[in-house]
Amino acid sequence: MDYLDLAKVYEQLESTTKRIEKTKIIADFLKECPPKEIEKVVLLLQGLVFPKYEDKKIGIASKLVVKALNTATGIPADEIERNWKKTGDLGETAHDIVKRKRQHTLFSSDLTCDKVYATIRKLADIEGTGSTDLKLKMIAELLTSAKSSEAKYITRLLLEDLRIGLGEGTLRDAIAWGYYEKMNSVNIAAENESIFFGKDTELAKIRDKIQEAYDITNDYAEIAKIVFAQGLEKLGELELDPLKPVKVMLAQKVKNTAEAFERVGKPAALEYKYDGFRMLIGKQGESITIHTRRLENVTAQFPEVAKLVKANVHCHSCIIDGEAVGYDPQTKKYVPFQNISQRIKRKYDIEEVAKDVPVELNIFDILYYDGKSTINVPFNERRKIIEKIITTKAFHINLAVQITTDDEKKANAFYQQSLNAGNEGIMFKTLTAPYKPGSRVGYMIKMKPVMETLDLVIVGGEWGEGKRSGWISSFVLAVYDPDTDEFLEIGKFGTGVKEKSEEGTSFDELTTLLKPHIKNEKGREIIIKPHVVVEIAFEEIQKSPSYSSGYALRFPRLVRVRDDRKPDSCSTLGQVEDMYREQ
Ligand code: AMP
Image 1 (cartoon, rainbow, N blue to C red):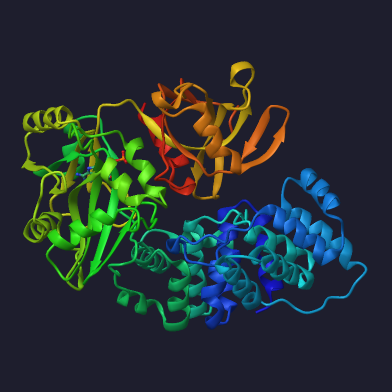
Image 2 (cartoon, protein in one colour):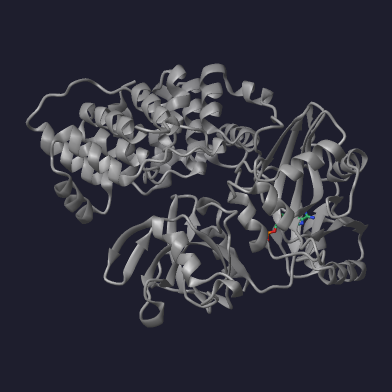
């Protein structure tokens, strides 16, 4: 397929903000797409050349793209930079620059999706001496063959910032819709979508099957390939792979035990809520993989965990779910999440930090056991499996402390007991419930004493003055809208950030984290690409016309940087609306 066809789809997607129109555009495109190209095309639609779970970066700097544009068009780099300052988007600039050039020359060749995809995948693997020159040559070659709209999206793809506003839910619905139309040889107008996606319709059932498959594989490209080439039924044959990441089940929140029992039913399993970070550990014979809830592969960072699991989890294959909590090896006291979060990204001296900040595993669930998925096994049965196969070892590997009760008094006492032991609160779990990867379905409820918090993304800020000059001193917060794939502003904060890093997260640290993502600056004001997620505490949510989300936070203050969360898994507009209503 010509890359130009895909570029046209990107353009159409960019020209509307309506989710339903976007869905229809993609549905129409997919149903015409040759099945053998679908996998690639669906990745490219998401601005990817590797499935998300591979956690592989393309890693091309903007400067290199400017140089490549210069090589491809002969237009001087400073002129390109000037245009870029004006547009604020190098993709837009590539479009302008190539268009200007093309008025005078003929194209050398037609670009195919294959060519773009293969070249960019190759770029990610080039390392060592001379690699920059080789990358420059390859990018320039792509851009030389590109028409202006192609240049725009190739540039954005290279910079891993496609900006076509395509959320995961839209892609899922589009695969369902395209498949339905193709199978039934019909064409549903966008306006009629609600009829077809209504409860219990055939289309809604297809969508749910696709979602289920996605929860297992995390890969719409693979799913679309199976659906369009082999049919929907084949999705049922997809199995969990113990060594690949799975989305974890998420918890809903309640204020008291009465509300918790109401949601999960009586009796329920109650567990300590440990304050560390989620670890999903896969075992297949002697191979172990460890993933975070963001699906990052952290196997290399936690060699001691891999050893522990090999020695103490007795099965041939499994996927276990738990919380890793750091502790001080001298005092044996739990340490705050920040202290272990540094281990997640650590690339060197791994064994030493493992000694300084060891982690204790608290296992609470199992998704796969000896060749079979256990996600549809009731929770109390899954617990029995982990009790059977895990040898516990204090400060190394434990099962989450658990009681089963239907009594509010006992639940409250257990809550106090958990807090006294240094934990965050407790969890309530439905005894008979399946494990729902990626969902916040209410089979798992958390109760903790802190005031309300949201996980928000920093999208802007202001440079400080006086003793804070050189630091970003005020930060603009945004919430994610999965329907439009947009980040909507919801407030500003400066409170909670410390002057010195020993006291907590400092201005200096936040500035260092944010600097590489600065998109634009005007005077003291800066616009920042959504990358850094922070947990923000606040007093209240108010309606507000001043922010694009329509809401504002009263007295927001920083609790911590959530480097375990990606921007698109931060709090959603829907959650903010729910919280507002609950107040
Ligand atoms: P939150 O991060 O506030 O949404 O709370 C949910 C998180 O609590 C989960 O994602 C786990 O990382 C963590 N957690 C700690 N203890 C447990 C437990 N016993 N069961 C389930 N999740 C737990």
